[in-house]
Image (cartoon, rainbow, N blue to C red):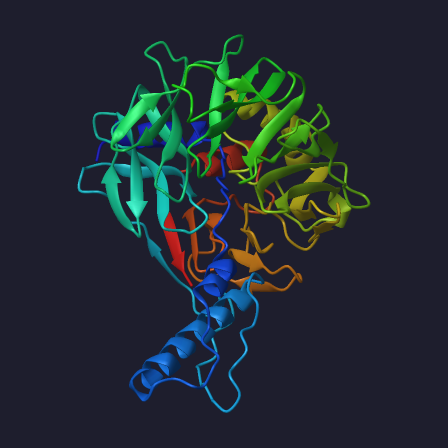
Length: 439
């Protein structure tokens, strides 16, 4: 492997941007109810054994749904006793492994994006000739996808395996695409803007993203029903920035130069998200259901040592302006970032001052994933933390709705008290090792 090859991978890592894809999940509880549970005991002897077997299976499914807070407990018919093995607590039996590389030579790199079920995940492959291609994993099995343009980077994937991403033109300009049915299709440019990046692709196949020119931002959508020739602006141009998109079209991000967390809805209405007492800034990075997650900035004396903007909370190229803004506060020592979670129904915000990095993923039940100096953890809706196995520099970026699969990467950490230049070199790092946790 040549030094030039590894430098190419280094450069790519600095250019990548966080994007989380959160389309809505199926109503399993309703499906089970529709299937029906046979409760009457008067059955022909020929089908009695089959009936008991079906009831046992249904009870097990009901217990699984109860664990994530989306199912109703099923009644057991009087006079019948069904036994089952209690399910393990979420994240109590996790294992971690490196995502396998496709057969093609090259280095895996970039941030992993995944659908809410955890079945599909995507990232990038830097090949020896310097070209960069998207890779899609299906239940851990990789394949290289066709691409349009240069420097391809997946940004989102839905539960049907449809991938949306970005590349660059020969001249270095913006280019966005969607992969479905074995083909990559270019998304139409957003007129009047310099850059555009997909943030999500929903279950219908509609792509939602962000466009900007200078410090003028807007949220846009490319509809599957259209031939991708008419992106629609969902927000008025201004100082709002999108970071994550929910399955119902809710977008979270920031508003204003002061970096205030913000959420706006498909009907165009928006609202500021609360900051906890003492916090001076914040950003919602991800949204799923009625939960949003990200970070808030606290004064140095109220936060743990070593706090800084999470390496994947911001990204490369055009997003450097926001990292520079935060660098004057977070990295400069005036503010330190800590993880935060918002309940979009009530507006309540919770934060964890004893942790030094942002929450990087959230699922439909309100669990969040948080990297940290002592290793990655997951935090329950009640605030209980569980450590994940694997390397201490593991950085989860996705969390499935059933709490059974996470994806992420290893991010080198700078020594405590290191100079800003040293921290920057650590964040740039070498080619990424991509990770998958099975729980």
